[in-house]
Length: 264
Image (cartoon, rainbow, N blue to C red):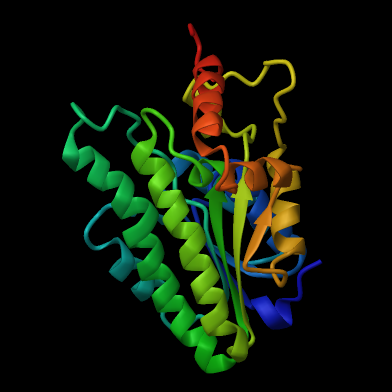
């Protein structure tokens, strides 16, 4: 499914301890690619590392918060001398959901720094070596949230929109150097993070994706950039991206998002 001669011998997975990130790690290990897994929580991180080592690959772990000022320098130092052929940025969570007016600007800045600043820094660092070698891949995990503004998620939606447009531009720049770039757009996915957030996944008609299916789609279509909408959500993405009837769509999305939260 994935060629280690193109995307190996090492891959870096930011947000690689559980959910979709862990499934990426398992599928890459199945392909014989060694791993550097980055996450904040020691327990899930070491558990996933042990599982992929059992498949016969090397797995190094970095327990750190990408919002720490020295995080990118730490990652660069830890991977110095490794031939990293694939970067997967799966760390872009919404760390602060709040109405913008009345919210804390420093908390919003954290959402921006995680989803934009850290992503750009890692893509720039590893992309430089990939361009020089003339091969490799960068996979950015995006969200349907980036196709439409939403109440209490205005900053998160905006940073995911940024990521999508950034991926398109980076894809154009690196294509002549045989480096693949893909923004993998996720819809509702059954991950531990979603469950901890209390997102309701039992609503009739709600399409909920499995993390392993999402990881499989992303790796299968890594060379089909710049965008791939996972989990059968292409029609939804196209509908949200439509210019016409924009106000009607926003109103509809607002009502739907309210139903996803417990107690609403």
